[in-house]
Length: 449
Image (cartoon, rainbow, N blue to C red; front, side):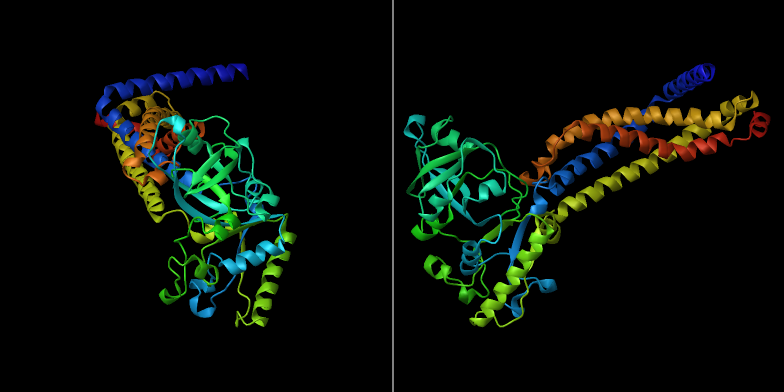
């Protein structure tokens, strides 16, 4: 066994030496193949890194237990394709779900946009724009939101409409210069809020709990839902109404009594049985609304967990899918060109191969030598592809929206995949040329010489 292994190593070394000599004899052709493989692999892996970031589960350890309920509050004439009800809730139904509390945790959610002022100690007097959400206290443990200082406000503070806030660490640094500022007051939209907690960095992509958008900047502030609603502290301009005539515009009071949808809703459920029970509850609730005259159609509700919701809503932009297909097509073109170049390279050496065959080299030995040469070219293309992939990931923002480009990341897995792809692709590209080279008839070639 040891003798056989030693012989195999010597033969591999011999084939490696022959491959290196062959590559040195035609450096231009070798460089062209390495460039083709490198560029093809880099384009494919750069776009794969973007696509991987876009398609990643934003909360994989818990996504199967987080659900978004949908209630058909508009009826058959306003359903989306496939009979889908509206994706959001109106205030009436969102508050009904909150009061009945049929889930472990739950929260109504709506988007906020306002501004705040920096603390005087920072020396700045410019307003700071802030983006955030109005939520209930259960939002934070439900989504495992990480805190740097403090924590969420309490359910009791929800109930008494306390003016409290949770802010991001980024906003904390902008307003106060950083540090533990729990207990201090921050003014948002002209109202003062006591800071209950300061988040560590938290910016899941997409924001699966609200608009299903990819965002570069993390949310800045979270405020108590009922306090914001009852004080009319910050209005909402994102209402979706059945008709333009139904739109209450800036009349927030009218919005609360309308069937315009502007609230996201998320619940946490233990298991499949709990999900079935909650779906039955939604249907029972719709039947109740029929009896009081709100709905005059059969229940048409939905309850999807986060992965199912993302899949249903097709949140990955079409441009990203197309770009990935184009990059993979470029890699395929590069491989086809490499097949042609390798075939020309190997067959050009048919005289040399015929001599080796006449001296006793087997077809398998010739094929192995050619594949080793293809593997070396693939290794060179892979190394070039690694460098170009790193550059491509950093430069992808030049050709894609910033919120999408920000999701492209470099890690050892991506780099090792790029190198492996280059090696495997080149070996596959070299298989046919190696097979053709091993079939060179030695007698005919030697006679021609």
